[in-house]
Each structure stands twice: as C-alpha cells, then as structure tokens.
Amino acid sequence: MRTTGKQCGLAATGVYQPSLRSPWLAAGELGHVNAALNIPLEELAQHIGDLFAYRERPVAIICTTDRKSKKAARLLNRAGFSDVRVVAGGMTQWNQYNWPIEHDGPH
Image (cartoon, rainbow, N blue to C red; front, side, top):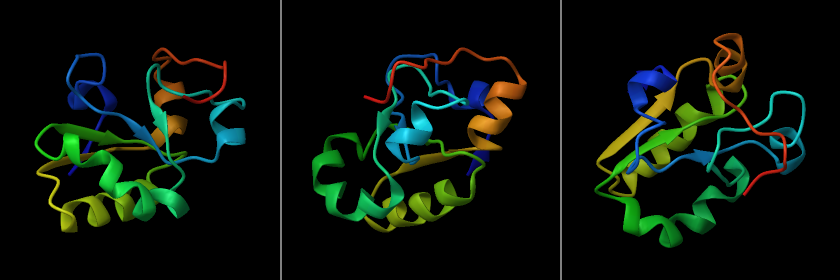
C-alpha cells in the first residue's frame, strides 16, 4: 500500500516506523522521522525475527524516495506482516511537505 506520511498516521502511537536508509543518510540532510528505527534494506531479512511483535500492527516504511520501501513491504508481507504501508515519496517528499524531522542520527 502506498500512502502519504499523514495517511500512515506516523504521528499516532502504535505505528511502527522502520527507516530503510543507511545510517549516514538518516543522519544527513534529509534527516529522519522522529522515533523511526533505522534498518537498512540490505539488513532487513536478518532482522525480521526481531520485528515479529509488530506483525499485527501498522508498519509504515520510509526510505529516501520509496523504491526500497516497496521491496521491504513485499518482504514483510511474505513474512506475515498484516498492515505494511509505504510512505509515498519517502524522506524526499516528507521534507517537501516540511513535516517534522530529526538530524541527531538514526535510532
């Protein structure tokens, strides 16, 4: 599912927010979404077991644009995650909307 950050309810509690960007990108110019957990796409498969607690909760995935997020969404769907959302346009679009970001490095 492609949706905007606002439609994902990223500001609401209960939405798990993995960021798929490399740590240096998450700490860079585009920043990162508050409370997003940084798991680069290349490492997501090995962390799926760590994320099972979120299988029945909404998961909004964000990357720089949204290409990696689409790949991650397919992987999470195949692993049994029931409500995976891709933030359309990623951090690029997020910044264009002037939505809140942090620059203190990824979590």
